[in-house]
Structure formats: structure tokens, C-alpha cells
Image (cartoon, rainbow, N blue to C red; front, side, top):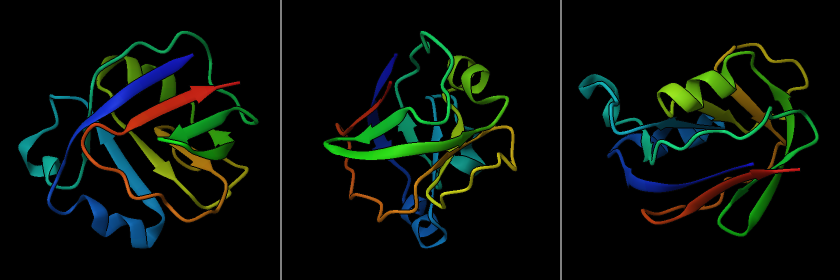
Length: 117
């Protein structure tokens, strides 16, 4: 239902991994945020993302535990969401996608992000 590629990684983006987060943004990331983001290709989401779906970073799978109300719209419009690897079953922030609590795989420019059933 969704696939994109990480184009570049801001110099401070990995700092959020200690807080179990990755911030995604399309090419239009504001300059004050770009250093903290994983810049991705802007790609439309084909259908609603729901808890129980799977997100894959390259070949590592993470179960989606909760989905903020604005995730699909934000991905479609800006490519901007936060991935939170904390296992939360309640979406505390509308622009966040919550994933099972698991170590974040080391991604690089060219890595893929896929979401599917």
C-alpha cells in the first residue's frame, strides 16, 4: 500500500533514535528541521494504514501498533510523520505512526520503507 526510499539523512536525525523515534519528511523539510529528518520521496498512500499492518525498514519488519489521525494525509501532502518505536496502542500524536518496541535498524540513503497488510 505504500513504499518510499530514504533519499538523505540529516546530520542530527539519528539523535532521536535514543528516544525511539525517526522523523520522516519529504524534500520540502523546513531548513530548521532538515538536520533532524530522514528525507524521503513523496509517494501517495494507496489505502488507510491500520494497527496490525507491517512497516518494513529494508528487510526488518515492525508491527504497527497505533496510527495517528493525520498520518495518511501528512504522508501524502508532506511526507512528514514520526515513527515511534515504543509499542504504544494509543495514538498520542496525530502525525505519528506507532510501532512495536524493537531496535531501530540502521538505515542509509537508498534504504526502503514499505507499509503493507
